[in-house]
Image 1 (cartoon, helix red, strand yellow):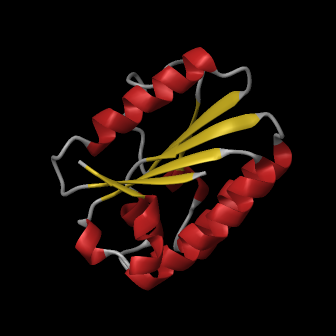
Image 2: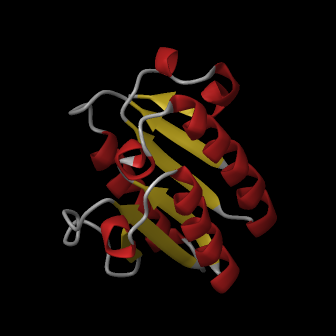
Image 3: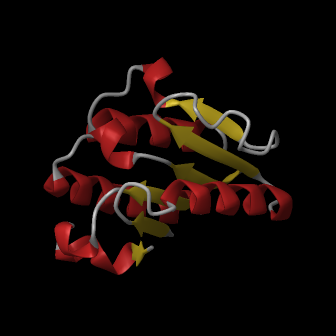
Length: 138
């Protein structure tokens, strides 16, 4: 299942994502992954979650970002939840490429039975209509 948390900068997307991640680590019997652009949230995320810093892996663009997430799922069948902060900073600002990325993640999420929650700094009106069904605005 894919969920997009939408809102402009300063709207509380990251706080909500952190809360969701920490709740998931308390409830799941599997593994939780939190992906962020840089290492700002090291002390906010539960020590039970795997924190991955995108900059440390040289992720540039949505194609490499998808490959990174797919590789995680392929290497660890126990991942139940993946949380991504600052999706546009990691993948890029192109909304059409974001839509393709989300569609591919939807397929991966279904096959791997992994919940994926992404924060996106945009309003619902700014994203392509075909991915609006995944959106929750703050």
